[in-house]
Image 1 (tube, rainbow, N blue to C red):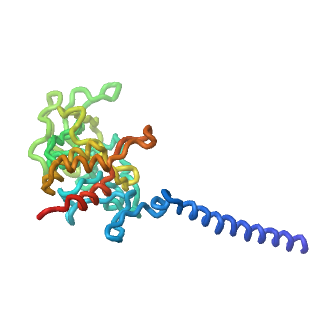
Image 2 (image 1 turned 120 degrees about the vertical axis):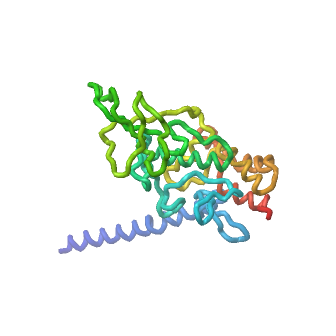
Image 3 (image 1 turned 180 degrees about the vertical axis):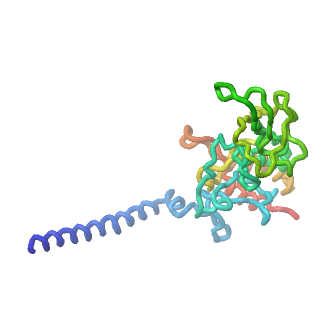
Length: 290
């Protein structure tokens, strides 16, 4: 009995000592270190304040759109976000769709390819550039065929008997993006039809290898919360922002350069522009004129 009591007393003392050290002392030490000048802002969440009120965090992106999700032309646009309904800190994450996701699962479940094509087309129209990119149709969906017919020993269809543009349903297109494929007329997809028996063939098309709309403009980050865009995407938006705010493009370009960060330690990552900080600076220096 005495041995049992001594063991429990030793365990209780160890618990109390470790609680004081790890439950109180260590967190207090870390908090004190975080208050060192240069670290305090980051430890507090890198909050951006205007007039003494917090309006954003420079570490978390935001959507600069109206109530209907349309881009506000007076602001630089962030990259797409798969976090909840967009930049939701409580639902950080990605779409988990990979480069082989090229066939739409339905009107409400577009493939990654079709999402990229749709976004590229929309950005091209908004910013007045060519939104075309490889493997996309002119209507902004994935240019993908299901080729049906006998196959050779390698599993490749020879002498196709039917060719379907799987991402172009008959209800949404007058004619497929391609008239014929290997001498067979291309048909649009029919709702409810299963084309999995066909060989999936993406069609590159005539779009340039280096699209005018950069990749970060049409793809979400892994967290869905990235506040940065590439300098190329920022440069693409300067003309529209300057026109909407009725200022010189050179002035807006200078502001973009001011909020462009180089590679971390000069070697890691790529140059980037913090959209949240840039848009706040825009409102302060070049307020929207009626």
